[in-house]
Each structure stands twice: as structure tokens, then as C-alpha cells.
Image (tube, rainbow, N blue to C red; front, side):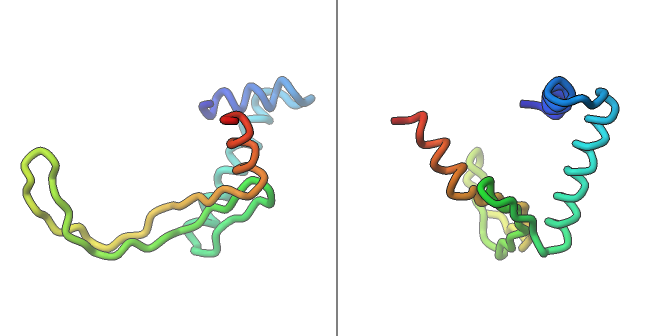
Length: 94
């Protein structure tokens, strides 16, 4: 699902105009981004949590040339699914 699909689905399932749905989605994404960047993270019960995770510096290997290169330490966004979401995803695989 793309962002535009989410906006259309929100607009169709509510009494909001498409422009209002777009504003809501943009506001939610901005709040998620701000929470992750600040380091506090965002937790949505039943769905999961979005966090900023630290990765240490390491030696990486280029798979094409097998050349070793230094990869600097950095922060990366991380999503940890909640229990309900994990159960729903695994329910279809049974």
C-alpha cells in the first residue's frame, strides 16, 4: 500500500474530503518521524513501536569486488511489531 492508497482508503471510509485525509496522514507521519528522530520512539499498542537504533562501526565487504571497507557508526529507524500484529500476520500462514 502506498501513501496515496492510504489517503484514498481513509477518505472513502470516513466522511473526510481527500484533502483532509491527506492532511491527517501527513500529520501522523510527521508525528512518527519526530518521535523517532528525537530518540523517544513511538509506541502504538497492538501494532508496534518505531525506534531509533544505533549501529556500531564495522568492516563491510562489497559483494561484487570482495573489497573490505569501513562502515561508520550510524542510527537507523527500527520497527518492532506488537503482539497482536505478529499474531495476525502468522494467522494467515497456518
